[in-house]
Figure 1 (tube, one colour):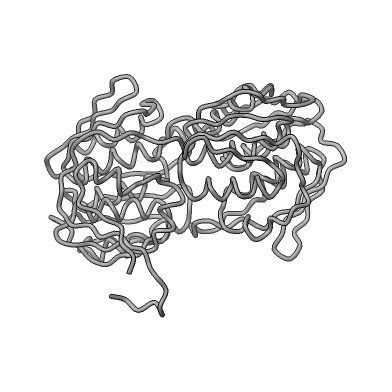
Figure 2 (spheres, rainbow, N blue to C red; figure 1 turned 135 degrees about the vertical axis):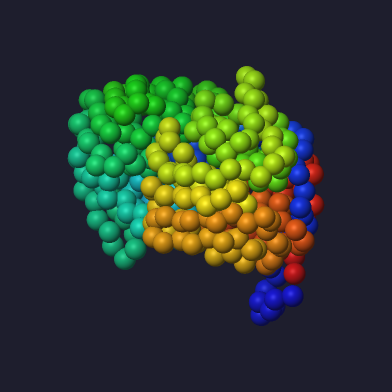
Length: 427
């Protein structure tokens, strides 16, 4: 047992190898939920949000909403009603907003609703430089004044007026944040070179359900015609989580298993499907279900992560586990984040042979992985290390579970139901 100075530490204990077999239900999308929750602040009324993932980032956001004066009613762990009729944008939320990256959506939402906002600079996974300069560029183009003071960002606008905004990079966060700020702005806002990820479409669909006028989400040009208010009084179900579905797809290949993945949108997973087929795996799409199976050693591959519809950066570590036991040497080129290969040090502890240099990594496939104590460095690395533990020979102990709990609902229970020997313990 490791000595943490008397502090109780949670860990996962995984005994492998286990070919995963069975069915798994996909939860609501984490990346959509953490943008839709702040979007409720734009509503002068209430709304019901269904298919909400039961994860720590969502719970943090609900705490923030309540601090701001919203009333949050939990019907089930995945179904809430939010009443944002009365909002206090002066509430002290600085410390809590520093705990996770998606807190920056509060800027666009509160700027649009109240004309003034101050929040702590966002935290989250350490994946390299993650500036919000494009967000600020968008807010200022709409008429806001922004400043950063002692680790807090402040934005103020007497009036927001629609304009044309070109994003130098197709940033998901900036696209959503500008969309939030411009929903109630005067006139029309055009976002050029917008990101096209499925959760951007979901946020736009949510806002339109509540009375907004947003067109073109899912393309590289989004037009937002400002409206006077969002009345809400409607319900909305969050889209299934593309990344969770992809995680289980790659788990099936890594463990030489056979998994049916239910409640997913197969079109969102076409880039993952293509790569699985390329390395020899099998994928059968049927409505809102996918069956993924393979009982052999996968072939080598070259992967480059790209914005949607390219291969997702959030599935890169999980694919890295697959390629660590592939036949031959594979290459992953990371096209989004500078520090996404931190997990490779942990896989090497398990017998992998991975050399990471900058934004590229070389995976010399080994016959099998061996269990070891490993430490989660970020959310998606956590999912990857769980998959590695299930496929490895012997016992793997996974630490730093708070990263995993930010984005996966009941992950060990879902893996256990499809055969994994996995348990969460406190030491």
